[in-house]
View 1 (cartoon, helix red, strand yellow):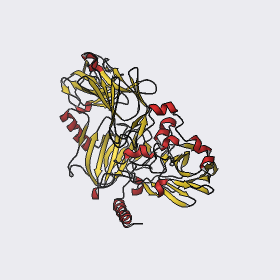
View 2: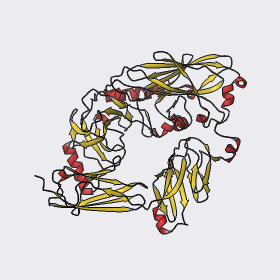
View 3: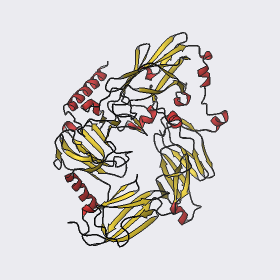
View 4: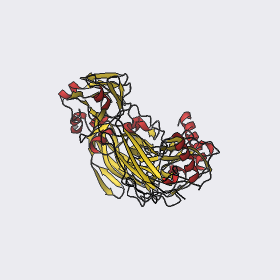
Length: 572
């Protein structure tokens, strides 16, 4: 081990020891069960914490995991929803997300700010002495806010640089007696230009020979090759398929790689699609972790990597490539891949993978090269597309065309690293049509999905993060607003909350505002249920007559105004 490596290792060890002195506690004060664990592959990022089950219920108490103070509070429609951030000794932190509400004193502080600013979404940074907490103090209640897929608590521990740490390394205990399960094994011949390795990947079948031991079909090849593994782990009391904690690989007993999900920087999370076989995921919906490092992959979870994780197979030699999958509790599964080295001209597998199977000679001729080292522009018909320098993880050849006003940016088979800018020259449109036009991604079912569209004169512009089909669509249909109760002129004194449904089928909801008797009222928007909710306990209005007015705006500028008069006795 070199001097620099030794220094880094010692620094990380001291950091870990310091953090562990805090003895982070269970934030739910019950036996924890996971619906998601640290580092698993999600969408286009690594999961930054633990998702703790709440039996699909909302309102379970959440407690501070260590002494500290509330340093940040955020309320948003998407993402973490209602989230609370604590800072602890030495700059370490913990995060509690998707909350339904906060502890009363914090809740009142946030609500006062929301009314002062007359908006639901706020982000606050209280002073260090505003909300000081001790380990075990009540700080909030579990919920399903933001982009949560169901009621749970998202919990994180972060280091002084705000990098998420694996909470299992810092005192959080999860019962786990189950070993990881492999789902798919792939291998990749190394092509000479080193590009688009995913294009040449092929599956190897797996056979379980003993509990927690698998044997792959024999591979006959030669030269430099790499492997990829799809796998999941389950913890006791949970059927969720979560990620693994550690992956080790070896060739004939010599360690070639170790991957450890102990710490992930948010800056690194954008490289998840480089680490994963993105093409295979888009085509097969299987997440495969590539056990080799390609260019533009600086992930720190890769701890040991000989020859970038590739192995060299010599003709006439025999090998066993071993993959070890481990969870945090030490449960282990092994996969052995027997390899026979043969002369390359005898390798049917290599011949079959000499070029992408989905590209003919004519296809290759019409592709547009997008270099990784410089920005590139492409245009056809009314569309212009700008690819910034380093737009993809590597230089990439794309099939680009315009067909009947549909922009075809290849297929979603190459991961985008930096957004692609689409421009559409709309000088043929009249002012009314131009005002209602937007750029949309067309999903596999033909449905347009609104992309954040801006206008520069008569040009529409949008930045997108995935390849696929795009088009220009028009939205001249205003949002709908529905209030089932109370009816016009009805007394409505017993209800605790007022619920309004808002929808927009085209470009989607952009903003809303609600008042009673001309005074702003705070309505919480849940996009998953299309519902606005007002809590009468806010006690904004003390008159019997309540003149409700709700204005909703969609992303194309259409608006709808809804008004209703109802009556309510003043709260005691």
